[in-house]
Length: 275
Image (cartoon, rainbow, N blue to C red; front, side, top):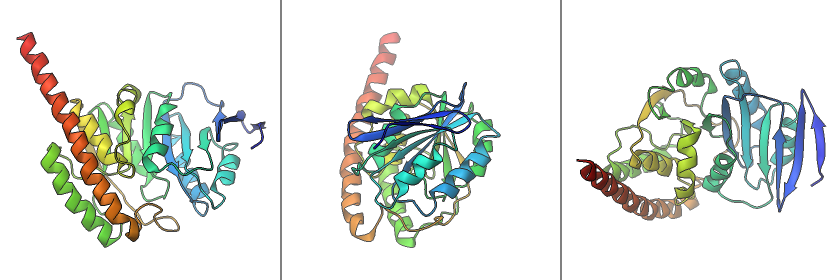
């Protein structure tokens, strides 16, 4: 990968760190929000997806993208490098597949804005819903979407619903859609949680919500529009992968639950000491 400086309305620097390439836009000042998208093999739709997000969100908040590309093999990295000259963006890309959760965590690690909005890159979540999220950002510590009419395959919805029963039994979190990839969170909370994240390699939002709740932060839900994929098919929840993903989720949640109990006991102990 070459090292270059590319100009659009400002300068976008492309540089190499180890085997990963990062592109960082320096166009904007006083960024209020960074929009994080993990991306894998979305060459057919990623340009339209980013454009729709930018058109919907940039009039509401001064934003920049964080795009964490995850070892795509369909030309997505090259498309993203071109798009990084059009939009304010930090781009992480490399040849090795890391997995969904690692891609999200890598993006969160370079968060600088006061808030991050996390979205999937398949175009299923409508970015037009962001305005109501932004207006409600002080009502709770973390805001998460609720896909009231979820447009996923029947089997995936069935498995997710079954897993949610197990999840609620462990954590008792009173929200409808803890795996929704439409999340608005402030930087201090994100930075606190990063070292604890990554147990669920493909179930990042299940873990993130449990970690937020275990630290005593408030979570509020907002209904969002959920759509069919913009193009292609899911790159993670293929039928042959579901048994392995399910087992990883079950065992991983037990570990997270142990951490949850430890934190709960610690808060009780601190409360007793203050009496």
